[in-house]
Image (tube, rainbow, N blue to C red):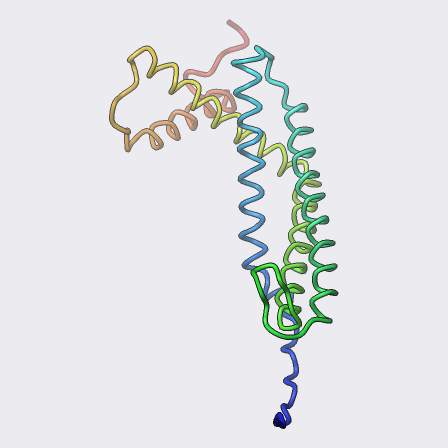
Length: 195
């Protein structure tokens, strides 16, 4: 039997970083959420189990260590994808199972490796920013405190059984009033030095 001549199709050009931005943003959102949850758990465990005082610097170091772990995992994944891509480039035919990569899988593997590399870059940029890391820690502390107080109120039977839809507005108003008291010496309720 004679096989007809088949022209090889040129592979599509690799996607640009801008084309991959959505996947990178989504991955970064997932990682940042994980960092925030890990910091929240450290606050809860430190307060309830270990009876430690709140130490923002230790939590910042913890967030950075967690981010370094994610970066190391992503770099290992990139190396694995690259080895897999090199093997796949030499293999023709149909895949026999889901991890049997062939020549047609080279472009998707390159895409995955590039997304992981961009995620590493963006994560390292975010974690290098002191304000971002401290923001993660402060948000984690706030969430942990809300959870602990809510749990304590529920144990004592003092928590409302239904969610309060106006709670956020009242808290924002209270926060604004507290800022006014702390920052505005002309406020009628502000503490006086002459007292």
